[in-house]
Image 1 (spheres, one colour):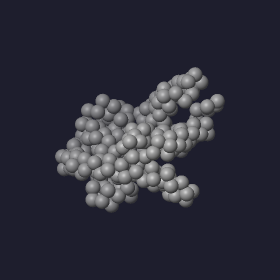
Image 2 (spheres, rainbow, N blue to C red):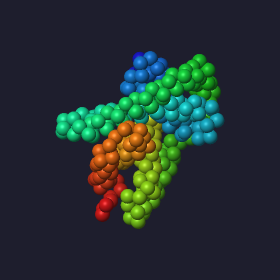
Image 3 (cartoon, helix red, strand yellow):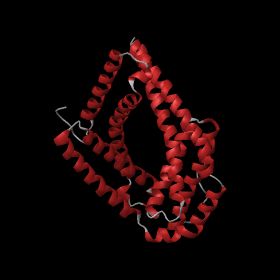
Image 4 (cartoon, rainbow, N blue to C red):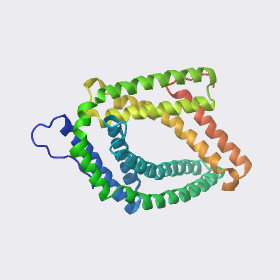
Length: 292
């Protein structure tokens, strides 16, 4: 169960705005984390991770030195949840692809994908066990005490010292620099490992801007309010490329022998994935690419 809103007494000041926004995220994070451990529902896992990510975003603005001790806790929780979430997403994407292969009468690809799904389920079970073991050690009464102290004693002076608009501008400058560097690499070595790594870093920078614009919207100037949608679009375009690369990397990491797949079937499928990565790359309009 999540909290939709918090009651307000009168017109809150700057610190109260921050407290309301932070506490809403914290309560939702706790609720979703508890629900996630109950049944590993994909949406509960996703929302617990999203709320932890937003908490990390706001804490990074207020406390870049991580002096409160909260950041490492949320970071570890996010990592644990992320491992399960990422395998959930991979399994679902491979399931959809297998369904399409079956509809197309491609039995070989369908068989390969069935083996990949089985392998990923085993991996997910390991991540779920680790989440079950470690998350309760992080999200507990001790964390509540730390959180309460942060809100009551540490938050106000941090709010007085930090301006999220300055942080947002710094993130925009960093994104612009990464984008320019990425363009230069693609001009020289389009399709190289270095180029794809630069694209991945650019996606992360866009994601950070998107989350900051969304989570800190209540404290940002009007000129930044459109940034969440702008950088969500960038993240989605680059994410499509990254997802297809991830499929390819996942298969290569597992290996043909582990999946017990014939060489011809394996090579044909890998070739198809490589072509799809290049196609997604050519169709993005964030970093224009030609000649691949």
